Length: 271
Length: 84
Ligand SMILES: Nc1ncnc2c1ncn2[C@@H]1O[C@H](COP(=O)(O)OP(=O)(O)OP(=O)(O)O)[C@@H](O)[C@H]1O
Ligand SMILES: [Mg+2]
Image (tube, rainbow over all chains, first blue to last red; front, side, top):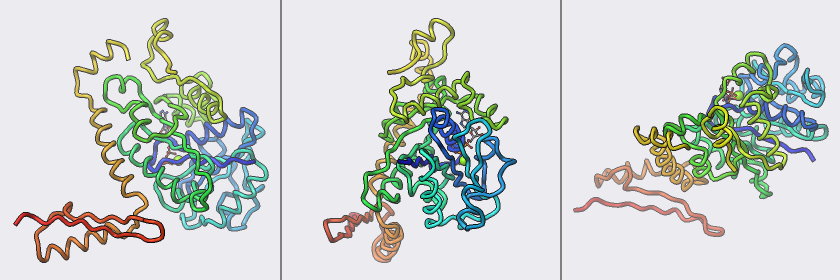
């Protein structure tokens, strides 16, 4: 049975696309046939992060409007056989997305994929609404910062009331918190909300904490999802998050100030 | 957090704890009004305007809430008039 995962946040620029690319790639790396769908109509970016921008011929909107078949629009990843991208349209306005069309494409994807990752646009308009509407699982990407946390709470409210599961009275969407751009030094100095603070305010389960990392920009420069940089802190943190998503219990890393050598080993990590 | 970080943190104002406190308040407030119909703020606005024709009141002296009880909904108005 295919699982539909929405990566959402309310606030813009918090790391949804970075996370969609990393988590989708991580699932494929673990043998699950996965497609990542860009719902950010008019502001397509997933293609760049995945490094397939020059191979986009048809997009999601073309499929919705029957101008291309799904198999024509799906872009196969260069690195992994079981990973695909469905790009957003760059030219059309947001109204080009409609519930019936999205439902049809999702139904078709469900036949062929184990995981369907929906990269939501920022905001709470049509694109964001449709990205979450059919979800089984929501990954709420949050930065340790007041406006992002507040917007995440708003999104949790929408997940609980405006999704298909909510409207049909089915079991609610499973919600996970993904805290990104975390800076343990600033947390230690009392300048940044801690993981515990954000968990306490939003009161949903913690899927992972991705540290603020130079590896993210380096990866996006090259069009390589950061999870493939397995030497990097962010790559490893995403890898742990994917394992947790698949039900493994993995200790959280990168929560403490990085100390060198022995001290790091003594003080790092959290149960 | 090590003892060094702790001492370092104590010297400056802990802005993170201010952020946390503000968030807890606003999030609790917004959760309370979740699921309320979109017209409530406008209704509140207009009610205030009407009441102000007769009595000077502040924005926060009129509270409007919709409560669902089984099959019926109750619109609750709470208006605090100033001391005479
Ligand atoms: N862990 C991180 N460390 C450092 N930079 C990061 C991290 N995560 C994301 N970024 C940077 O933040 C910016 C926004 O990331 P991204 O595009 O993934 O956000 P988004 O939520 O998809 O944005 P939008 O709302 O516009 O779709 C990018 O420049 C990205 O490189
Ligand atoms: Mg994005």
